[in-house]
Length: 215
Image 1 (cartoon, rainbow, N blue to C red):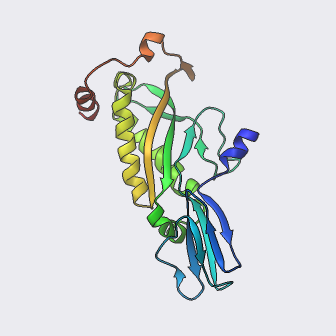
Image 2 (image 1 turned 30 degrees about the vertical axis):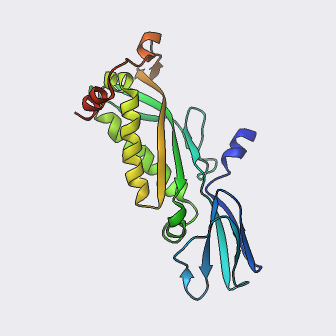
Image 3 (image 1 turned 180 degrees about the vertical axis):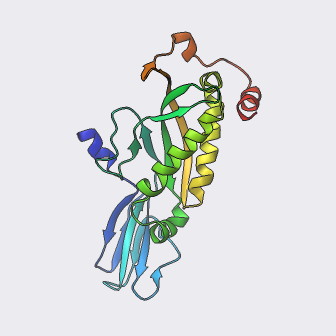
């Protein structure tokens, strides 16, 4: 349970209601809601900043890179804002059913945290990261054969990172990377472990890998 508690430390950190100052720690940014003008169109970085007591409310966001883990045993239903998801199932281009585990490295765009707060709100893990990642990962995997995914992992990771970053950017988030940890084929409802030699990524030039995946 302790491990899951750590995952609750999310992008959203705290809300500062009263007082004259906003104390922003390293790796964080603050946004301010003004009761007369709404969410102000700027963010405040680390340091001590002035605000109008009670008339202005500040919210702190964690702007560090955080890991969103897709793995067996993770249950997002317990807390929809936890940074993670259960394994993603998909059907490849050659008709094989697979299950995927991995990690997404993401963060709030420091200069656009105010847009996230105003347009999405607090629950952007359940509103954006989880549904977008599920949809885009399934889409990419369905365009490739099972062998392409297994033998060109680096190119698949790069492609997923680029697609997720493009989608996240529309909402004020950044995808720093995608890490593919495991791909298993499913037969008759059971996962089929890969042989050791199948798990090894073949040494090929990056240009050839990218051409194979994108083709």
